[in-house]
Image 1: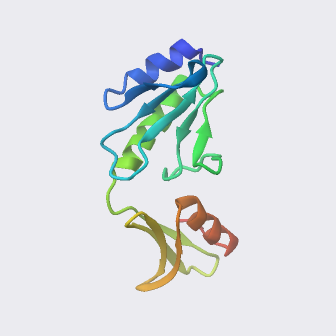
Image 2: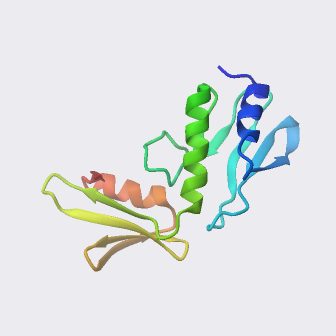
Length: 147
């Protein structure tokens, strides 16, 4: 496991992130250029090595909590650099679009529109969700997977 200092050095190597001190010695890092309301990329990095990175909109599947955060306690340097870069990219991408497919080869698409996550079947709106994870959970429950 990387130490707090090693994780800090890795995170601080991303010049687009701004450090924000929080309580109990924890540190957050914000991406102020985010095209979304969400700006926190690294959340509550603690001196004990625990911390979180925002991963809700990353294509690669991470085990995220209800806030869209992945725990980075046991991440290697390579894994930490990758998830931070992906998190920044996900907050930079405009017109997010992701296709999902089921066993019958039907395709539904998640679009990010005006702070909502819409699921479309072609041109037909199938559902609207406040978070990406809500839309993804709905599609998984309906038997779809990322294409």
